[in-house]
Each structure stands twice: as C-alpha cells, then as structure tokens.
Amino acid sequence: MTNKNLKNLPKIFRMKKRADFLHLRDKGKTVVTKSFIMQYAPSKLSSNDINIGFTATKKIGKATIRNRAKRRLKEVIAKKYLQLKGGYDIVLIARSSTAQISWGKLVADMDKALIESKLIKPKQD
Image 1 (cartoon, rainbow, N blue to C red):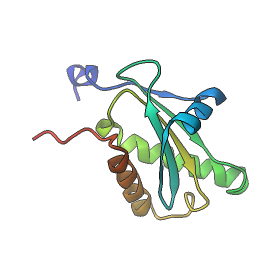
Image 2: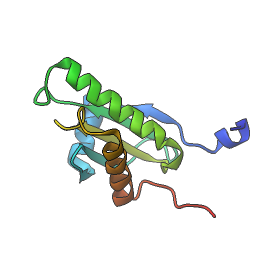
Image 3: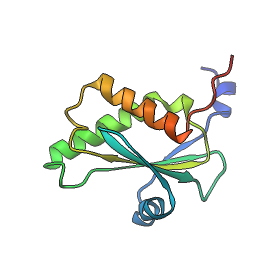
Image 4: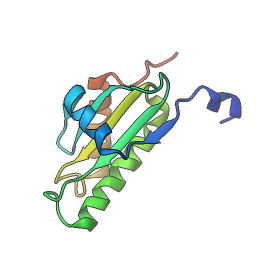
C-alpha cells in the first residue's frame, strides 16, 4: 500500500477513559453476538477517526482468559480495519465464549455485527 492510499484511511485510536465507555453505554447503539457485544456511536471528536475500546469483565474468568479474549477481539478488528467507516466510537465487550470460540465463528460474528451496525464502507466496484 502506498502513502497516497494511507492518507485517505481513518486513524484508529484506543479508548481508555471510563467516561468514553460510559458515554457509549448510555448514548450508543448495541449489537449482540454469541461471542461479543459491540457498542457504537458517532464520534464526538473528529469526523474521520475511529476510537475503539476493548473490555472484559471478571465474570469471564481470570486475567489470562480476559486478556486472551481482548487479544482476539483486537486481532479480528484489525483484520477489518480497511473496511471500517471513519467517525465512530466503538467498544467491544468480550463474552464468556470469546476466548474459546473458533476463529472462523469470531470473524463471522464480527462481519455480522459490522453489517448490522452499518460501520462497513460500501463496496466499490
């Protein structure tokens, strides 16, 4: 990919502040799949940036399980990076099945969630 193509891509930032997570919980929309929950809303800051946060509660398991679930969510969203629309805040919440579900099902759930939320750019022919 050349630098010219990179110029048009949205920047992805990590959400880390509790207030941002709570804002999405209260004001955003939610898509629930078997392997994760996605909350999203238009970004407050910039029209072309993507802010993504990842979380896993202690209900899922010990720290190693929670970290594995978050790593898998980070990887699957990274694979979809080029397809994402800019200008949105997204939070991915791991569920108990996130760490164990097969990779194919996790990717299928991400596709389903992104299509349902309309966060995927339309295909260009």
